[in-house]
Length: 147
Image (cartoon, rainbow, N blue to C red):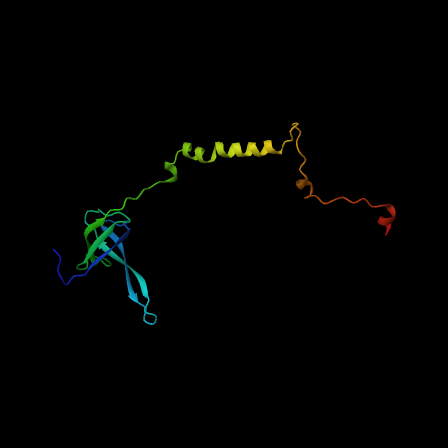
């Protein structure tokens, strides 16, 4: 039963952590006073959900009602669109999924790099870049050292 003088809003559920309470985010717009471009505003409403039916992400319709608690002045009318949320925790991922991601692909790329640096005769190729990290040694004669 919807009374005409009570306001009705439509928004998304952003929190269901409290018992029998949901937080609904309603997005509305108004023209900017100077530029007349629409400016979006977001308002959060605390609404009463008797059966705890809502989930985060649901599109719901709420209605203004008498004060139920300090912040709750709205109640849930109906759920317009249900949103399924997948809860995946790191502990739920088994070692097999992690091994597939990091295991054999990484090892083969490392062995391919090692094979590419070897010469056709099987002798290792000298790496001149690593020698450039060291400072060159300069031998001085006795006369230059005396100066």
